[in-house]
Length: 577
Image (cartoon, rainbow, N blue to C red):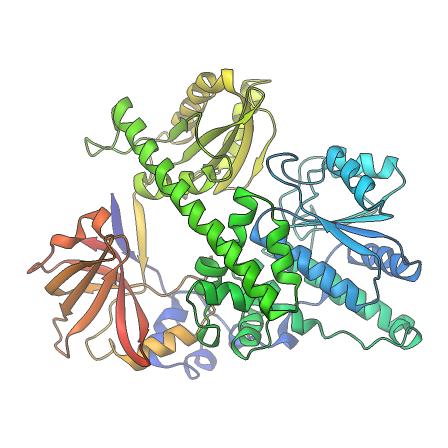
C-alpha cells in the first residue's frame, strides 16, 4: 500500500525566503535549506580539491606520468557514470599533455566488474601501460591491482563506492568514502571524483610551470562539466550542494550549445531539446541510452560517442545507442511478463492484497545485462526488496537486487554470506542496490537464506511505501509561471527531489494515449481554468476509469511544450481514491 505523506518543513531564514517566490519557499523549506549559500550554484562555491584525501599522491603520480610521457590506460565501468568518467579522464589528460593514453571498459559478460587480473592481462597485450587509472571502480579490485603492480605497472584508483575492510595496494587512491575522510561531500559520483583529480592536477602543473614549459594552453575544465552532470545524474547519487553545483554548471553548458557533440546527439535521438534541458532529461533520456551499450554489448560504443568532436559521427553513434536502448526495452518487457507469470505460477503473494517481505527469482533465459532493471521494476510494483538472477554460463548465476527504504541490501548479503560460508560468491553494492554471483545449483539455498534474513531484518514487516508531498497548491498557483519556476529551479534529483504536490481534483474526462498512459481533464475545488494532467503507465495502475471521481492526486507541476506552445500540466505520480 502506498500513501501520500507530507514532507516536514523548517522555517526558512529571511536571507533565503526573501530570494524566492512563494511556491519555491515552501519547496525549499521542505528540503531544509538553511542558508543563502546553499542556493549559490557558481563554481566558486565548490568544495576545494585539496580537502579530498589522497589527492596529493594522485596528482604527483599523474604529473610524473606526464613528464615521462608514460603510456596510460584508463579502466572504466560499463554504466553511464563509468563511461562519462572514462571520457572525462581522456579529454582532461589529453588537454594537459598526455599523448599516449587509451582506455579499456571491461565487457560485463567476459570480465565482470572492475580491474580484474584478466583485464590487466588484456591491458598489457593491447596497450602495455606504465600506469593504469581506474575510474568509477577499483576500490574492491584487490587482485587486479596486485596483478598490475606485480608487472611493474603503477595504479591510481579513483572511485566512490564503499571500500571493504582491506584496501587495494595501489600507488594512490582517491575516494570520498575512505575511512577517516574529511571531505565535505561523500556523495560524489565516479565522474565527480575524476573531475576533482583533474582540477588538483591542473593546479599542481600550473605551480610547476608545466603549461608554459610545454607551450600548452591551460585547460578550461569547466568545459567538461557536461560529462560530470550526465554521470552524476545517471548514477542517481544524492544531489547535495556540491553535486548540485556540478550538475547545474553542466546543464548550463549543454543548454548554451557548449556541450560535447555526443551528449547533444543522445538528447536529440531521445526527442529532448538540449536548449530546454533539465536534470531529469539526463537521467531518463541520455543515461539509459549510454547504459544500453554496457547492458547488451560493449560500453566502448558509449565512450566513443562521448569522445568524438565530430557532430556527424556523434549522431551516428547516438543512433546506434538508441537502437540498443529499444532492444533493451523489448528484452525488459519480455522478462517482466515472464517474471509476473512466474509469480502467478508460484501463487502471486500480492493477489490477496498482502505484500511479500521480498522476492527472489531466476529464469534460465533471462539476460544478465537487464536483470537490474527487472529487479527495479518488480520492486516498484510490489514495494519490497527483489533479487533477480540470470545465468552467466559454466553453471553460475549473476544476481542484481533492489531494496526499499529501511533495508540495507548490501549488509543483508554480507549477513547471508557470513551465516552460509561458501554460498555467495562475489557481492557488493550499497543500501538500495547490490549484486552478487552464485552457483546455479545453490539458487534454492540462497532463496531460503534470503527469505530467512529478510524475516529477521524486517520483524515488524515492511513499512508502508510513501509518496512524499510538498503540500497543496491553490487553483491560482496551478499556472504556467509556477510550472516554469519549478522547472528552472533545482537541479532536482536523488536526495533533492523534484517537487511533488497533492490535492483533490474532479476528473471531468480521461482517455488512454500511447496504449499505456492516461490523460486527464481536471477541475480544482478552488476554481480556475480547466487543468490538463497525464499519468505515465497509468493503465497498469487502473487509473483510466476515474471519470466523475474526486481522487486525491500526488503530482508534479510541469511545462508541456508542444508545437511551440507551452501550457501547465500535472504529471500524476499516485492516485488515492
